[in-house]
Image (cartoon, rainbow, N blue to C red; front, side):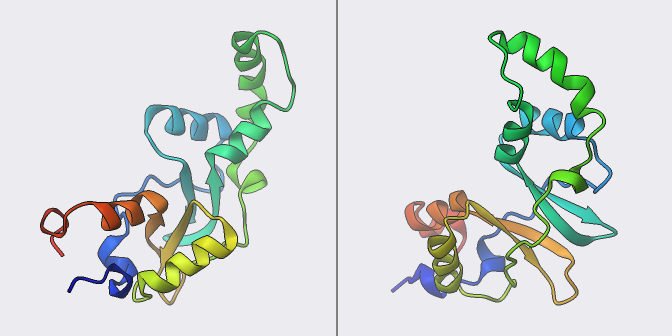
Length: 149
């Protein structure tokens, strides 16, 4: 019988991941978030994971100065966001998963910390992919034959 808890993280993770560098501006990160249906951007330098920037992180920064008119807020925030860098806002101490961890272990980490996504790295800290709640839901509810498992 198929038991998804025994699958390895690398069998389920998303490997086609948008990444940014520490010197990427928040305005560029915002553009990437708006153009794609993603919620997390790994911050990578020379293949090595430096941190994570979430859509929520960016939202907190961009709504810090409330204005009644959202259009005016965006216009006023653009110069500010074009000067701030991902390295200044990203979460630096990120919980990372190994590719050979079981989903059972990964789910335990998700539940204990209420994370939405975690990066998957090799033993040197190089980014391999990202595991999100969506990946876990896909394994739990998509028929096995469609997943190729």
